[in-house]
Image 1: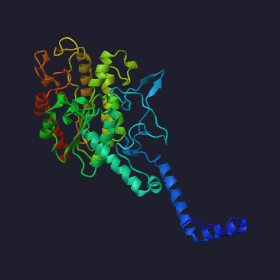
Image 2 (image 1 turned 90 degrees about the vertical axis):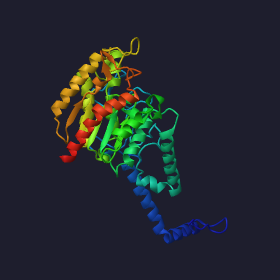
Image 3 (image 1 turned 180 degrees about the horizontal axis):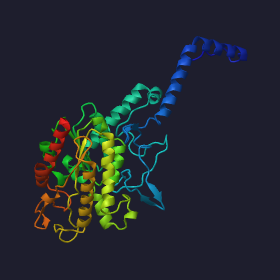
Image 4 (image 1 turned 120 degrees about the vertical axis):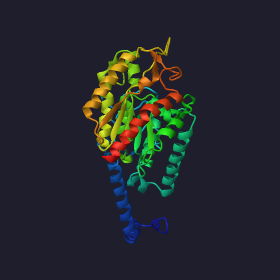
Length: 399
């Protein structure tokens, strides 16, 4: 559809103008259609924030996971004070201040990992075969990362989980677990990579939780603090698309370690203090989950006991015990105030006593003094966690 070139090298200007006018007259419809498509594509891509990924905000609205969905931490002088707020997972195991992405600024993490909704503008400007190539590339990377032995980071695991939520949205899931490494162990992974420490634990998940109702989904990430978890549920890992009946939350052990070991809480990226403030950060997660799924019931686990890193690791109480006890007491009070209604209620469950015996961590229950062994997961699930989840599931179903 290229315009005709006038014959001869010395053609007059009027002849050239006439040939262009003639070409435009013949192809006016195609030119107008092309301009229209480009204009609509541009406006649509601007409205979509440059074609960023889709996520679910705390209100259930779809937002961009790399940008406006994350609430920035209030920072001053290099410190991050974010009590009860959310902190985007860092590329390592520790949280970092959230960087707010400009509207059209590219995301720093892998663009082809996670859930993305391509804007109409992106589809207009890219040829179909190019678009198809990148879609296949995205699926290949997702599959590779699900079995990869290369260390991932928390952001990549978050992207993978966001994709899983989107993929399961049609079928749904009746039970969704949220937490840190204590719950990620049910996948047999640590930050997304298979870990020998958790061998046998996925079998416990399959035996007690996997087939509950329409099924269960584990969205826990090793190293997460309450602030990290809050960011995740606001930016792609909301349970809303899954329409669950029960949400199980266990987070706080990493906050407690940092508060107890790494000094002044005001210097911590999690920005929480022992006891009541720590429970407030976890409560913010639960409140957000119930805002997103008001018909669900939350089973809130107390923080498990943990031993010292040095000396007698199995001895109790440890240096963490006072903070753990204060946090669990505050969480129990919070759940009591929320009420135990089948829908929109919270049940506090403390299974930690099953890991202790005679003033010590039970022999073989927590080899590293932090994570239960496969047998301990079986005992905890059978005697405490699974019955609590089943009870909540039955209550919501009959309400």
